[in-house]
Image (spheres, one colour):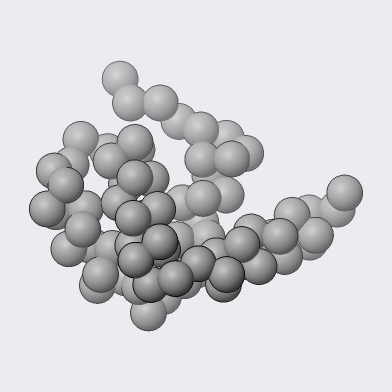
Length: 70
Protein backbone atom coordinates (compact mmCIF):
# COMPACT_ATOMS: atom_id res chain seq x y z
CA UNK A 1 0.00 0.00 0.00
CA UNK A 2 1.48 3.32 -1.01
CA UNK A 3 1.65 6.43 1.16
CA UNK A 4 -0.96 8.11 -1.07
CA UNK A 5 -3.50 5.36 -0.52
CA UNK A 6 -2.97 5.62 3.26
CA UNK A 7 -3.64 9.34 3.10
CA UNK A 8 -6.66 8.75 0.90
CA UNK A 9 -8.02 6.16 3.33
CA UNK A 10 -7.64 8.55 6.27
CA UNK A 11 -9.24 11.35 4.28
CA UNK A 12 -12.11 9.09 3.25
CA UNK A 13 -12.58 7.97 6.84
CA UNK A 14 -12.67 11.54 8.17
CA UNK A 15 -14.96 12.69 5.38
CA UNK A 16 -17.40 9.93 6.36
CA UNK A 17 -17.73 11.16 9.94
CA UNK A 18 -20.63 13.24 11.17
CA UNK A 19 -19.88 16.61 12.75
CA UNK A 20 -20.01 15.22 16.29
CA UNK A 21 -18.03 12.09 15.41
CA UNK A 22 -15.26 14.30 14.01
CA UNK A 23 -15.35 16.57 17.08
CA UNK A 24 -15.22 13.58 19.44
CA UNK A 25 -12.35 11.99 17.53
CA UNK A 26 -10.45 15.28 17.61
CA UNK A 27 -11.05 15.58 21.39
CA UNK A 28 -9.88 12.01 21.98
CA UNK A 29 -6.74 12.45 19.89
CA UNK A 30 -5.85 15.77 21.52
CA UNK A 31 -6.32 14.39 25.02
CA UNK A 32 -4.21 11.33 24.16
CA UNK A 33 -1.42 13.55 22.86
CA UNK A 34 -1.47 16.45 25.33
CA UNK A 35 -2.25 17.11 28.97
CA UNK A 36 -5.40 19.05 28.14
CA UNK A 37 -8.85 19.30 29.69
CA UNK A 38 -11.94 18.02 27.93
CA UNK A 39 -13.33 21.56 27.70
CA UNK A 40 -10.14 22.91 26.15
CA UNK A 41 -9.89 19.99 23.71
CA UNK A 42 -13.55 20.44 22.73
CA UNK A 43 -13.03 24.15 22.16
CA UNK A 44 -10.00 23.47 19.93
CA UNK A 45 -11.89 20.75 18.05
CA UNK A 46 -14.81 23.05 17.31
CA UNK A 47 -12.51 25.88 16.23
CA UNK A 48 -10.48 23.57 13.96
CA UNK A 49 -13.41 21.65 12.47
CA UNK A 50 -13.30 23.76 9.31
CA UNK A 51 -9.66 22.67 8.79
CA UNK A 52 -9.91 18.88 8.39
CA UNK A 53 -6.22 18.61 7.55
CA UNK A 54 -5.48 19.23 11.25
CA UNK A 55 -7.60 16.25 12.26
CA UNK A 56 -6.03 14.19 9.47
CA UNK A 57 -2.58 15.07 10.78
CA UNK A 58 -3.46 14.06 14.35
CA UNK A 59 -4.99 10.80 13.16
CA UNK A 60 -2.04 10.01 10.87
CA UNK A 61 0.34 10.60 13.78
CA UNK A 62 -1.71 8.38 16.11
CA UNK A 63 -1.86 5.57 13.54
CA UNK A 64 1.67 5.71 12.18
CA UNK A 65 3.94 7.12 14.88
CA UNK A 66 2.22 7.57 18.23
CA UNK A 67 4.14 9.74 20.63
CA UNK A 68 3.02 8.78 24.15
CA UNK A 69 2.66 11.33 26.91
CA UNK A 70 5.42 11.23 29.49
